[in-house]
Image 1 (spheres, rainbow, N blue to C red):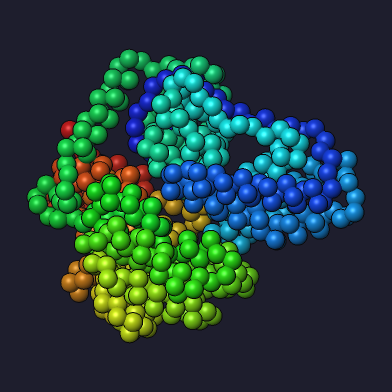
Image 2 (image 1 turned 45 degrees about the vertical axis):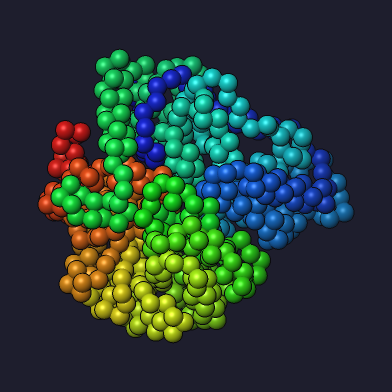
Length: 550
């Protein structure tokens, strides 16, 4: 075995010995009554809440909070209770518990969307429950020397609690770019590779080089390979560190570099990373964390925690992006055959109109007294009529800059009409890619079909960006694609004029963009859309953009 290839999700190069993490789950019989199971499940939820409260990393906090909510979901308790007699202590409840979790997981996967994302959490919660019932809970991942951590997968708690003095890199066999390991690793700022088949065949202590940028793992790497990768990485990082201030291309063209966030901690992190504002404030986290609809006053207080650190800067707020594909039962509890195409985003005005009206009221009120440049946009806008309806309602409460997410093929193809009704647009590249390619971005079997590099997706973006340019209206990107320096340059070449990303990605994107001019970005974009696959588009664009760094 000379090398392995996975998906690079957090850039950086690390060389060191492998530390293989193997989760051994006891198969011994577990004697318990239903009441003991429910008490243990509640304790699992409490433990997850405590972990979320003590972990500083925002993305890890969000994941653990979501897991705590699942562990305390009455529907999960009902799924377990349906298999057990309430008045009996069973000699071994393991099979019934695993079966109940399995059935619940299948139901979530069938629903899709946000529920499907959360289905992966059920395995972790089930293992925690069984460990608590059997008294075999582990103390977590303990490191005492510099190592490259290799695992089938890692829990968010394990990943977030790593001692960065010793964790050189993460390489896991499972997961994709949106998996918890990927998200938390990016937040930690250490090299990470996911979806790396065969990595568990490595031996403990074996020396490897992990390139979190390319996704490559070199086994017993030659000194020449180590030097080449390290020199290149150092040059890229030096380039990023040498450029400060507002984003701009080598030719002087300004590019607003913004941060994505979901709460006040995320807003502070964006300021620390040098963001020029917030390009995507995900307001749904407040709703997902509540049993009942947050009051207008509760919303105002939460929104102000994001607005206050951004005084003097732009803040782009996305209204509630939820629906039957997300666990917000007090908004829309109707089960749908295909939630990704159902009542979600702005379409909630069809079923829960008052929720969105109250949110607009709260956003406008929260901005009063804070000197921010407030922009508000709605997700899942599909038609000019929907855009006009949103604009009218937002302006009625005093919001001046009103926009829409361009994340459906209809909105992109019809952008000349849709954007005519509002002041700006923003591409949600995750959903737009999924819809253009008709491929679930959470299905690892379709990973080759869910890349924003695909020429079909890039052409769709070009259509909408061209329409925005003709209307002289700004259009940005707030999806995952903006964090990729090469793809960011291509997007600018297609006509995009602002980029919003995880704060940890801002420095590198800013540094790379400072080395290319607009003409080069445009040339790379044209080569990319002329390609026949995502792989070819990326290769051709990099050939033009990288130059000496290729």
